Amino acid sequence: DADVTQTPRNRITKTGKRIMLECSQTKGHDRMYWYRQDPGLGLRLIYYSFDVKDINKGEISDGYSVSRQAQAKFSLSLESAIPNQTALYFCATSDPGLAGAETQYFGPGTRLLVL
Amino acid sequence: GESVGLHLPTLSVQEGDNSIINCAYSNSASDYFIWYKQESGKGPQFIIDIRSNMDKRQGQRVTVLLNKTVKHLSLQIAATQPGDSAVYFCAENLKTSYDKVIFGPGTSLSVIP
Image 1 (tube, each protein chain N blue to C red):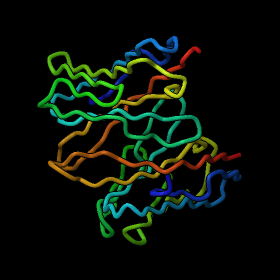
Image 2: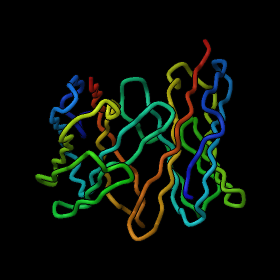
Image 3: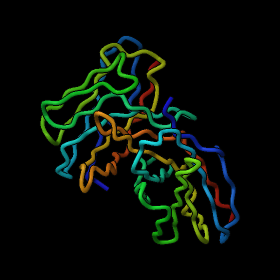
């Protein structure tokens, strides 16, 4: 569904290029996340933001940066792309809800290939 | 360290049979667990959740069981259908200084018609 959208859906780039992946959400959630997915490794957290003025590194933030432009927008940048950043990237949102339960809602993903 | 892992990376099931997907977690402080389904070309989607004060929760054709004694979580799918073919992830919510969700590596479920 279109609650969480990501652009572009697919991207091929060359080593050393700067890339920005964008995420927008209409769920009204304060919390947003960027993950990368590699075969056999599941989802790994890159960065997360609990509100517009809050940015936190995840477990694999090296080589990435983020910007939370508004509650609804959270972008991920690769300042100088390298081949091992080839992966599927997901944006997600969540709302703490009752008692801190954290169900996350994911976008459709961006497939990035770095040559 | 903290981890959420799945016992079987792949599972093949005959259509109409029941499926059981298992997950082990290592952090006894986790108090909320979620199962996600990821179909090909799509992002993960919420299936069902369970809190640590429960040991069983049922949804439509799905049941999640939580055994805190052995730190084990399972997802049961009744009468498996071809549309159930997907990768299934378990995730745990760690209540530390910040809310953190850790995902397992995923199990690929294939339904044989």
